[in-house]
Length: 142
Length: 142
Length: 142
Image (tube, rainbow over all chains, first blue to last red; front, top):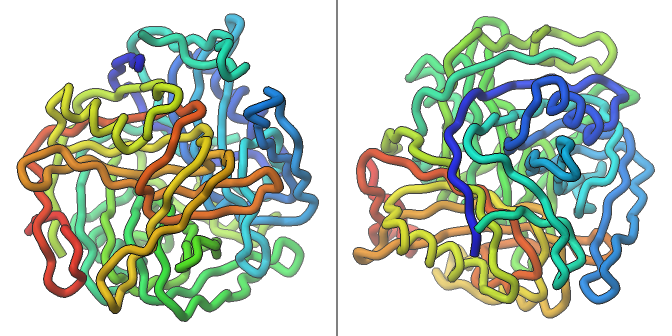
């Protein structure tokens, strides 16, 4: 186990831009505000999305294309630092018109409308480093 | 993009009333405590629910009826002000007895038991205004 | 309705141990840090899991076995006190390689990798007591 302690600085309630990619949009906020540690949730709707599933044996993502409008039933994510830059990691559950779901790692999501609740944290810098065992970039916390 | 900055005031842990509608229940808390900006999550179980899917072309919700007991696998929502009143917006993922899911905008959810974690924010008033492009009432933030 | 008010103390960002059970892992943090009230979210991936669905008539959980790798698309939970000990309650939405989901009460989840955002609260002790109507141990808040 490793963990890092933070204090909550500000809560930002953000209205995402129509037609932006949610990941790039949140990355933009992180860069603009110089965020090095934050956590967020979001609800709303996407026009389309690309999800990822990480193959735990082969150590690579494969993509799941969602090419129709879906509600963002849930989105939970965080901002940390990877290779010196703000890095956004988010997982979503999307819901189609009959309520059925598609979920996974959010690679790209084109915004119809979205409400993002971002919690800016202050404390140590939260950096990602390569983890041999999983092949992922994980938080470097002790 | 538009955003508003807030400070976290209080964290409320709330046990929802059996047989209440979760949306009306949270609206009741918001009215009682005069909340104009808040964010919440909830887990628990519902006896039945009505979910919404917003048609991005026709600009209206259509309803998905869930007429059997389901776990609230996830619920993420917020409180803002619409037409001068506290307004609750929430999305859920519900899980049936075999673990399969139904998800979307929560219109109504009859509580079996639910634990709500509500974060009261202070700062600007968070108001919703009609958005022409989507037909939705979105946060009026700059 | 019943609720208890808390102040946010610290935000902990925790990297869960590979191959730990997520519930036991978070229980361990709670015990180590003496947490009596907290809320958390998590994203990541599990190697396998056991989910629960609570039968609202028979007042017992039945288990749903997930015996293959899944993304943690969403995990929302809290820490309170039950029978004098830190008690973790969490619900999850898991996503398989094609994006389809399984969700419910998290009984056990073997961690491939997981990022946990834990919010330590201070205020009253949050205790669970048996609730006759549902057969569940619910927060004893007034």
